[in-house]
Length: 306
Image (spheres, rainbow, N blue to C red):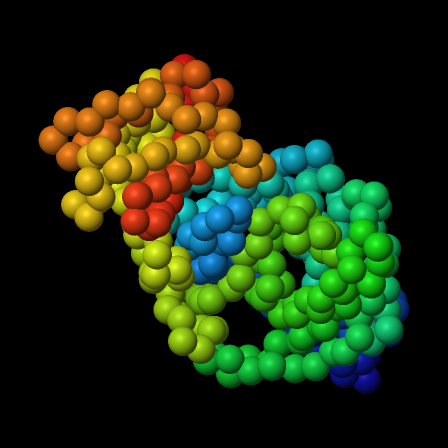
């Protein structure tokens, strides 16, 4: 009889240990959310900023690092204009909640309809409200929870546009461009997800789009040009399009706030434009070559540190 009792206890212990989401103390289940912070995930986005749109592929670094006492992953991207770059932002995830390295909540998949999240990161942040929850299926046939989050209609944020958050993917309309929601669109760039894959398998693709990093949604009057080296030091070289006469263009350089900060000295030779950028501080910049026929040729570059 004693042997039977011990076997029953052993079987019960094995059964409980095989249920990874059952907590015998709380008597409740913790939902096993698909992870957003996952180095296997890759997002292709349309990055809209100032007067141009580029493409970016976002990934998390393969190894975690210790930041503020917690193990976090760094978010990195490859831009179709800039090349490889880092967001210099670190995140961690627990039980469907994504945190920044400073413990600020980015996403909380545990919220239901009419639940709210108050955020105080900036003065124009207001309470976000979950107005609907649901389930969506993509190419891998896994059920993913969705949340429709409404931003408030306020004097500082008069649009009140909804945000669609998808389990395992993040915000479809503005993926991770900043660790907060409900800001005025003029406050920063937007990243619209057009493709999402896991371990190379395409899970989601926006209709009419592709996962190609070099694809572009620039208007017809925009044409891509090549610049090098990138990052650059004191000089930047631009391959002038054949459709632009060497004597019929202007060049302007903008900072990330959209201010024109430089109309640089230039020289041309053999179809190459040499631009003096020695006066620029290290950082990211946008350039615009303007043709006499009204066409514009946007490009991005990085001024490297000395």
